[in-house]
Length: 135
Image 1 (cartoon, rainbow, N blue to C red):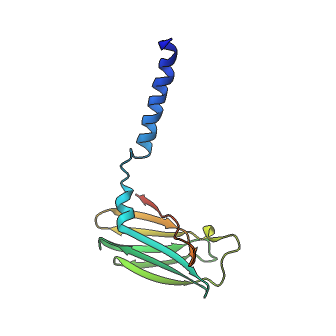
Image 2 (image 1 turned 30 degrees about the vertical axis):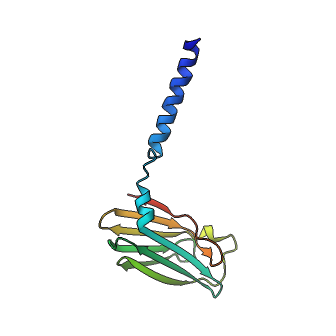
Image 3 (image 1 turned 90 degrees about the horizontal axis):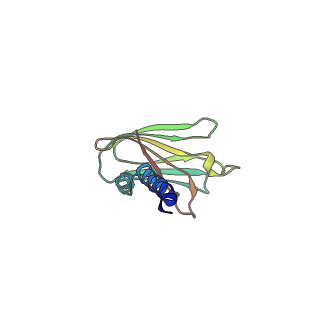
C-alpha cells in the first residue's frame, strides 16, 4: 500500500518545491522596491492626469515616463528621484483606464534598471497595484 502512495507524494513535494522556487520562495526581493519606489497616476475631472514618482532612497539617476494607448503615446524623461507631471486627458477613456498603462523605466544606482507599471485611477478611487520588474 505504501508503494501506491509513494509516487503521488513525491510528485506533490516536487510540485510544491517548484512553486516555491518560481514564486521566489517567500523572500520577495521586490518588497524593497515597493518600500523604496512609489508611483501614482490620478485622473482629475478637470481633464488631466497627474503622475507622481518618489524614490525614498534618493538614488534614482533617471526615469522615462510613458503613458501608452493614446493616439500618440506620451513620453518624457526626468532626472532625479522625484517628479510630478501633468498630462492633459480631455475625457476618461471609453473602454476604461487599463487601456492607458503608465510605465516607468528607472535607472537606479543601487537596484539597476527597474520597470514600474500601474494604471490611472480617478481621484475618488484608491491607487491601483504597481508591478515591479528588474532587468
